[in-house]
Each structure stands twice: as structure tokens, then as C-alpha cells.
Length: 288
Length: 244
Image (cartoon, rainbow over all chains, first blue to last red; front, side, top):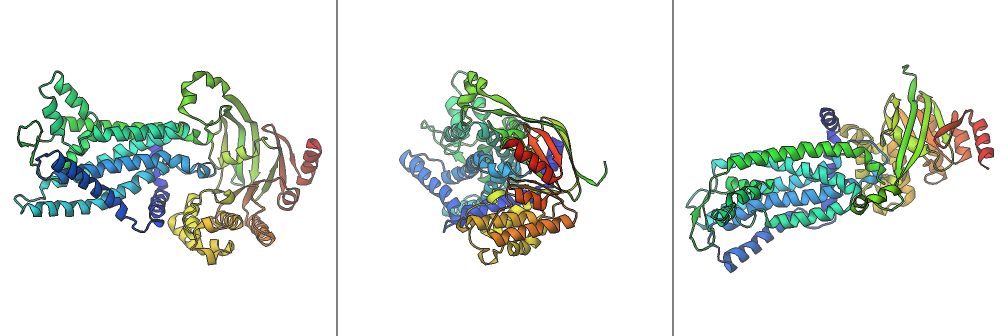
């Protein structure tokens, strides 16, 4: 695998040119361009605020800030994986003619979406500032925990790249993969604590038989642990409404053992996915 | 090995799995008995070819003889089933009708990107944009998206990019007849100049005149093996009488 990484490094200029090309293509034919990438999360937050805070009468303070902190990385994973699923197949005419490391194709899709995630972070911080301003700054919206953000971003990138390697390679041979993946991403949006909290799962399960086992199983989904970490990193730890009329309860501290499991799963996805991709990449041009 | 050898192909075999069931899908993988419909196709069977630096070699042969497979192996698109290929120098394939062009990007953007795919650094590619557009006679249309280009314009741009990436070895798969008569002459002039500069060319053509005009040597491939090689006129005559 070392030689594959070296070869990829040798072609880094082509990778960046391909990222640039993807960004250009995406915005060439739309008037609002990058604004669309921001409109999507902001519109989602507005609807979720309406549903949870107003209709379902959830009392959690700063609810929309927490949701946005989790929605941005989840949206990145979703869009990057779906884009990359098609990446090799779309470029097959070039792949059949010229040599270059094939992993550039899914990586370019992941990186161009990652750039969108980075660009949306300043908007997130402005949003956070405004939310806390409306509460008259009872606490500062910015904490030292935000310094953990770069680590989270690296883990998110590696997890997504790993999934992109696997899915883009399999999709060359079985186009069903793309549909299966979009279904899974849709289902996991609900099984990942984006619009609710990891604490909700904890309080719902803690007194049930096998409750803790199920709770840990739920967090074996690396996306679940990641978006929870984003919430705890980007927004000050406050109180949440666990439902069931118990009133507000302080948020749980970060579950470091489960976070360690997430890091391990991420590394397995990244290196395992890359190995699988490298095993399959020579057969892309020969697909029966 | 002497540096006078540009390409050395030693006992190359290449097999493919041929599908009779249409497109690949999960269904095909799940229905195990469909496996039987995958047929092994031996395209190249023990090919040994040597091309010297500065030589221009034409490949002739009927459809399915393995010409394009051989060129793809040289471009490192396929891995051989067995055998070794040694290449001295940078190799560039001529892309037919702008494979790899994106319709929504401009001619200039596509040229820059494709030059990089063919192995140039960003700096080198940027420096060659002007000569590429000039050779293709597309300076006026540089900022138009290539979806608005005619097929002749696309072919000219494709040829021009490959001609400007400073390759030592050019791979040409039936794309010499691009554009109009004037541009075709320009292409042949370029090839002559490329040969003068000790560049190596390997090309596939079904056009007798092209082969006779350009090549120094001709190789006749039949069923994945070299049937005959040598002087273009002799081999062509044998090939044409042999397949007629």
C-alpha cells in the first residue's frame, strides 16, 4: 500500500486539478452557485426547528445550533459518498485510454465536498453567534473545546474517503450499489443523532433490558459518534430535553471509549477501503 | 537493455472475461449459474515485439486481432495476464474525439486538464495552452464550452493536446484522419517532425495510404499473435491478399 500512496502523491497536481474541475462544473450553470450549498442546511434547520421546537414542543435551548453542528458533517458524508459512487463509472471513457491512479476519481469527489464543508463552517459560527446573541450571551458561545474540531474533520474525511473507495469500486461492477447506498444513507439519517441527541437514546434505553448493549451498538455506527462529537465540540454543553416529561437534564460528557471505537472503525474503513479499491482498480476497464 | 529500445514487449498474454448477459449487476453476481455465461477470451497469445527509438511502427490486422488491446497495455490501462512490458520514455495516447472532455467546460479548461492527465505538471500544461490552441486553430473559441464544438474541432483539440505533451512515444489508434484535409496535412507534418526528433510512434490504421506514408515497419497481428512483420509494403500486400 505504501507504493500506492507514493504513486498517488506523485499525481497530487492532477488530483487538485480534478477537484478544481468538479467545483467549476458544479457552479458553471447555476446563478447562485455556492449559495445553494448553504441554503440546503439552513432550510433544513428551519424546518427542524419548526417541527421539534414548535410542533413537538421540545424544550432544549439552542436546539437549532446543535442540529446544524451535526447536520453539516452528515450532509458532507452523504453528498461525498453519493458523488463518489458515480465517479469512476462516469470517467470510464478516460480510464479506458489513459493511466493515472484511479483513486484520484473518488478522492476528487470527496475533497470537493470537503471544501464545501470547510466553507460552511464560518457560516456556522456566525449562526452560533447570532443564536447566543438573542439569548443575551448568558454563556459565551465559543469554548476551548472547539480546538478539537480539526481532529474531528480529519476523522470525518478519512471515514468518508474509506466509504467512497469501497462504494465507487463496487459500483463499477454492480450499479445496484448506488441505490442501496442512497437508501442506507436515508435510513441512517434517522439512526444518527442529527435532529435529536445521543442523550435521548441513552435515557430511552437505560432502563430497558440489554439497554446499554443497544446503546453501544447504536454508537458503533461511526457517524453517530462523530455527529455527537461535533455537537459537543462546536456548541457549549448545555441542557437537553430528554422527553418523557422529565424536564431539562445536563448533557452527558463525551463518551471517550466509544469515540476510540469510532476512530478504530474509521481507520479500518480508510485502509481497508483503499486496499479493496486497489485490488479492484485494474479490473475497472475489463468489467464484463 | 540498451536505451536505443523504446518499447520491449516480452511474451505478452492477455485474457478477458466476456459476458453474454449484458450489463453487470448484482443480479449477475447473485445468480451463480450466470457465471457459466462468462467466457474466457484470449486476445493476446504470446506476443513479443521490440520497437527502437525513433521508429514508426504500424499495426494492421482484422477486428479482434488484438491491436487496440496491445495499445491499451502499452498505455498501462490494462495489466497483462502474463509477460513483461518495458517502456523507456514518456508515453502519450491520442484520445479519440476528446474522451475526457467535459462538455460544460471551455476548450481552454479542457485542454489544461487533459494535458495534466497525460502527465504534464500544472506549470508545464499552463505554458503549453497557447501552442495547443494555436495548433488546433481554436484560439477564437477558447472560452466556448466544448459542447458547442463540432466533432472536427474536438478531434483537432484532442490531437493537439497529445502532440504537445512532450511524449517520447505516441500511441495512435485510428485517429489520424481528423478534421479537414488541411488539418490532416498538419498532423502528418507534425508526425514527420516528431520522427525527426527521434520520437517513437506506434499506430493502428486500416488506411493503406496512411501506413505507407508514415511507417517504417509494419506488424500484422492475427489472433493475438504476430503473423508477419517487416517492410510495410510487403506486409500490407500479404495482409490484404491473406484476408481478401
